[in-house]
Length: 316
Image (cartoon, rainbow, N blue to C red; front, side, top):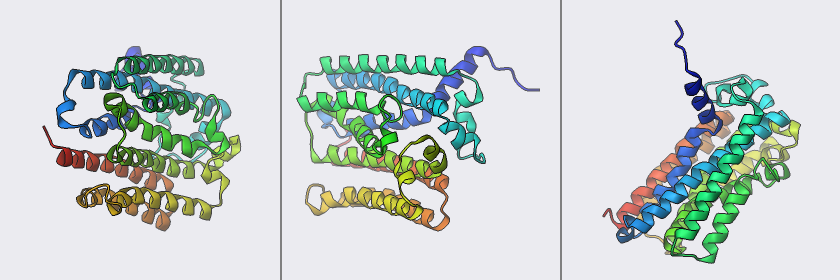
């Protein structure tokens, strides 16, 4: 006999899937990266912890808004219907991820939730900026741009429909590391810049393979991703260029003498996973498997960066 699910539990589950809660949890790892990159003496101070708490609460709201409004756009322009219902379903991308497609939520509910989540996020980030003693102009600019641009990926200005989606994603994901670190310290150094870029490339190379899988659906509704705008060969070259750039972000700071040699040793597991991802994609051509490896690569690089920070700056 099938167990009955209460309306409240069903609604919570639907909204959790609307905002892609696993995606939100992965993004919250930016706070751990930034926190471990702080000097040991400042990690547990009240100002640090409260600033990071304010930013985290805002981040949950902003990311929830991004995902909810993205699904609203996807249902309204038909791209989600084409990319999910119009293709063979696999365990790698079940339609259950889209509660608007399954009818568990209405477009009006999702849109209202997205607006409220965005307002929630903006309020907490405004509080974080007002609270921090380090009111560096660059930090305020990065945070405000993050708030404004992140939701414009497929809603509002719909920048991904004009060939700017990859740039927006790289900036936004990187800024999620830079902004809280800057709010706490007011500083920008080589280590946090490199780690922010690695965090950004981690998300970009997940999206790149997702976009490869969604070429037909995106093209039908005018979403101009690189995968849509180029040939299959051009897209493979583009993904190879992103992979190369990602690895150069790891290697170049060491060659330039900006990070110690053993940074490469700590990041070696990540580099191996990243190379495996692209090499396997060239062999089997399956973008969803490559996307799954991209998630593994992202979590691996986060773990590697945290280990490096703790070894380099100290545990306590």
